[in-house]
Image 1 (cartoon, rainbow, N blue to C red):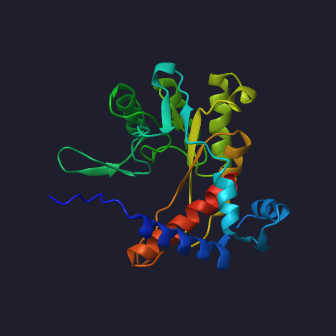
Image 2: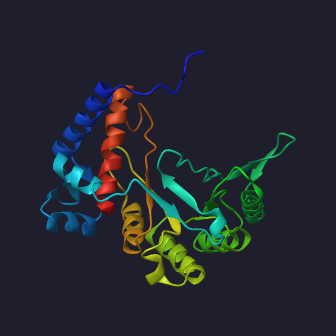
Length: 260
């Protein structure tokens, strides 16, 4: 049996890294966000409107500020999770489904009752480490406030770490303010990660303004952000796997540098 998770060789990783650095230096990443571009420009980065260009040293300097592992604290301390390190695997449910498949093969729109059912499944599972926002997308709630209902349901039904709302900067701010009620206020959270959020890239080589707002909100509270990438080969990125990895790596590294 062939291992389908074969590790890339050092030479392979070096070539992908070098290609990513070339992309960041020559093409850059457009953040579609004047404040973010201004922050980079004030630090001496080359910019063109909202597009930012990175030198390899810029990336290394940003990575030097990171830590090899950290703890995300839960309402129940026994359920804290460690991110990073040799055993730092954290299992979470999926996010964003709008449909529910029944055991009889039927499909229907997801509801808030389905979301609360997901909360209960996460809480009682000995395999899922954390959960939160958008485990399913309730279609029976107003879109403008659905994030508040989902966060309240998760925070009251589950005592595991919180995966916060991240559809916009306002949603991220709402999740942080709600978590502050549980964990003793913003000042305490500045030294204690309790909420994670996702910021998705807008491939190729872009971030939306909304995702930039999420990064800034989380950074302001010193809470961790997952820089996620969902390039579709042949649609929003190259078909070739090495080129796809180089582009993906470049976008994620730009996001990490933004969070610095």
